Structure formats: structure tokens, C-alpha cells
Image 1: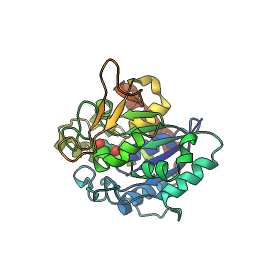
Image 2: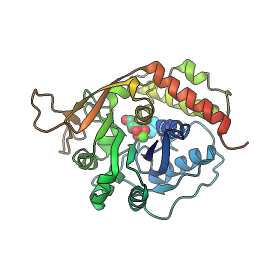
Image 3: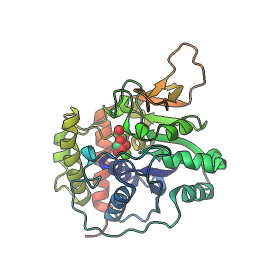
Length: 313
Ligand code: RIB
Ligand code: CA
């Protein structure tokens, strides 16, 4: 059993990660979910998190984090996720409780209160995580690892060199990569292999209550991915949860990874020291390959599980 904390900016792929984690209570105990401005504004991504958690009848603490990055203003991604940040399905706007404390303080409290080490699942810009580690350094020894979606060694998506989650807040990412906490990086190198096919998406339509929600989300997200050149859209964030559930479907290499925070064309780039004798010890397991069939089956199986245990009609 792993105790996990999910930091996210739902986000279609964030939603798939939350659903898949929630479908495996025998393996993952979700201590809490926190939101951060990223794909859309903090208000919108928090409403999206409320919609997902309410839809599945979850009783997981939800906390709001920072509205934007440490230094620069937030640039959201409506082109990818729509104006709501999770376009596609209609949600009845059911409410869901949000804790009164800021997510950083609440994460600190909950992680220290957990009797066993906690795994952070970071699916968004790393602002909340960076502030947690800097404001409350004692929490570091209670964190087993950070399984994050972000970065890319070979290329970016926001810019040729920088991936969105890192590009939004490179300073926060730099703090996290230099924290000494083991990182498992699901960067674009692996997440762009982590796709669900159109046929698989269509198979979810009317298959069950949660499956159909996933169909509406993934159908929109897949269509949206075409503008970026994807036939089947990568479910990026799900990799950070899939690695916790089925690490054997991934291949990766331990490397020293750092983040560019300078202004200019490489701002937000995550690079690895590929020299025979790197300047620093490895700080990151960089995931490089995933078995796509087993990855997509993990999602479809999770949705089938939730179809039968979701919120009563
Ligand atoms: O680059 C992909 C990342 O940016 C994912 O976390 C997605 O949700 C968006 O936030
Ligand atoms: Ca995300």
C-alpha cells in the first residue's frame, strides 16, 4: 500500500490519473488532492477536481494551492483543454468540500501525520511542491519519492525544448529537482508513447457511468490533440500513476537531471548529464519506454472497476 498525495491541474489527463488511482484502493491510499493554476486558472481546475471527485463519490480531502508560478504570470492552456480546462462532459456542478487551509500548509500537516512515507504524484506545474519543500523542509524525510509528469529530455511541447508543466514554473521545478528527494520523471519521452486509441475511447461510450465520463473527456482531448499532430492523444499524467501501479510496463534510466531557469530559448528545458562521468549523482529515474497496450489496459480496467463502485445513480 502506498500513501499518495496528488497535485494536479485538471485537465483531461489529470482526471484519468485521479480515476485510475482511485480505482486501486488496495494499492494506493490517496491522502489528498491539491490543485494549482496551470491548464486553466486555479478556480477552474479546482472546480474540475471537485467535479471528478464528486462524480465518483470520493471522500478525499481537496485543497487549493497557488494560483500561479513563483515568478512569472500564469499562461493557461485553453487550446489543449478548453475554456473550462476540462471541456467535453457536462457536470451538474455538484459541490464538493474544499479544505480552508492553503494546500501547501495542508499537505505539510497531512504528510507529517501519515505514519508511513508518502509518495507525491505531481501532474502539473511544481509550484505547490516547491513551496512545500522550501517552507517545511522537515517534510522531505517523510516523502518516499515524487512521481511526476513533466519535462522531456529529447524535446518539449510548449517550446521545442520545454514541456508545459516545467515551462510554467521552471524555478519551482529547479527546487524540486535539487531537493534530494528521489524523482520518477514521466517526461514527454515516455508520455507521448502512452496513448489510448480512438477505438479504445469509443469502446467506453455508454459502457458504464464512469467509462462514459471518460469517453466524453478522452473524445474531446483526442480531437484537441490533432492540432498538435497527434492521431491518438497521449494521456500524459496517467503515466505518473501507472508507474506506481505497474512499474514493470515501463523502462527507464537513472540520470542526473537539471532544469534551465535562464531567460531565452531553453527556459524550462529539463536536461540530463549524459557524460560518462556526470557532474552529479543521479537524482531522477527518467522513464523512456512504456508498453502501450498494458498502459491503456490499465486505464480501461480502472474505469470498469469504477463503473461498478461509483456514486449511486
Ligand atoms: O505537457 C503535459 C502536461 O501539461 C500535463 O500535465 C497536462 O495536464 C498539462 O498540464
Ligand atoms: Ca496536468
